Image 1 (cartoon, rainbow, N blue to C red):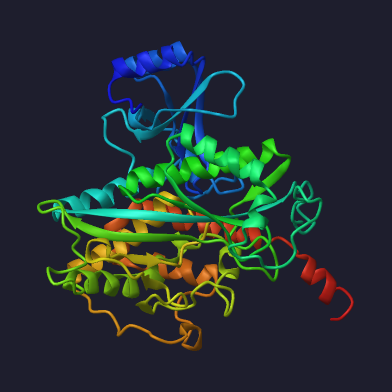
Image 2 (cartoon, rainbow, N blue to C red):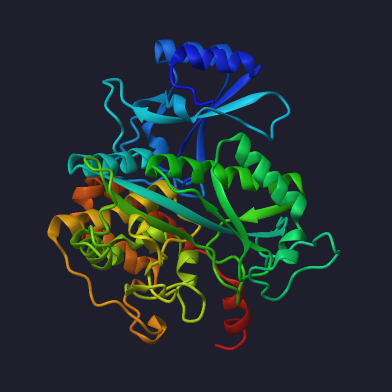
Length: 452
């Protein structure tokens, strides 16, 4: 049941005997932040708008450190009101006590939305498209690895033991028996997703050992970002239930493929409800070509939103299944922008750059923003690539500092995504990279300790 009013909300909470409500929202990393309230306190907070927290919550890095000297957040602790989106109300399957979760938007006392909140960044892009009589349809594909619980971060990850009593070591891509090694876990994932109204399409074993991909059904970008946000949380909880970890790190295993979050996307006219990527004869439309032109032109500037950590860039090497440049092609899995074979009504573009470690709200917002700029500026794409794109020049940022510099100076993306958001996001990424630079790795100890 989808709840759409306060009266239905109260009825739903009562009928499900809910005792607590987790009011959550995605932070910059895409992790869940928020507050847990008894159900009556939750209902009262909606009436008197008393569910608040400081806006400095968005000035935290993935490790919980604060960005100091920010141009956006001054840490005067201005309060934001957590405004629950009633349509996102779900029962949580993993708590013993009947518990619900609801995703909140962050607003100031004036009712104005916080422009630095990742969910609002996506909402703003959706509104930009709406002003042009456009709406986007998207479908994310999320990959993740299963691993033994890793209690010492200095130690490499190990693949978990399956029901056969053995660990998976080699590639068993699309292997049914390989997935069945963890069928109790995948059954729970399906059950959790059904209960949380997460539209799972297909599940497959991917290239890496104990690597799984789950495709979500296509739909509205905000709804799909919410589902991806909830999905990652649910998968981690299922894994913990089975005594292992699930990780959405972009590159958790050395020498193995990384994990991505490919995004299928197309645009529909709100006037005709027709797919704008195909004309009446079924040919590629000018909007389709301009959209690809926008992705090719602006994705390198937006790379930080698709690959937000040092680890993210370990995916983008030759022969590791991830693209290394901005070429496009028909049914070509070596390019960044693949156009799957489909009927004209289903014509779409698959952005294969984003990693599984991205904030889904920001990855979707960035991908749509690049395409939007292509439409606005009528950008023409290069010719489609028919051969192996890995043989062509690497033209996306190779390292996080390069991506950081490109986003900082991209006026077009700052205007489209929001200047304050881009400023704060780059401040956070700079702070995280500075912290990474203080870490001495095992490689350095092994090869430099006695050799230099």
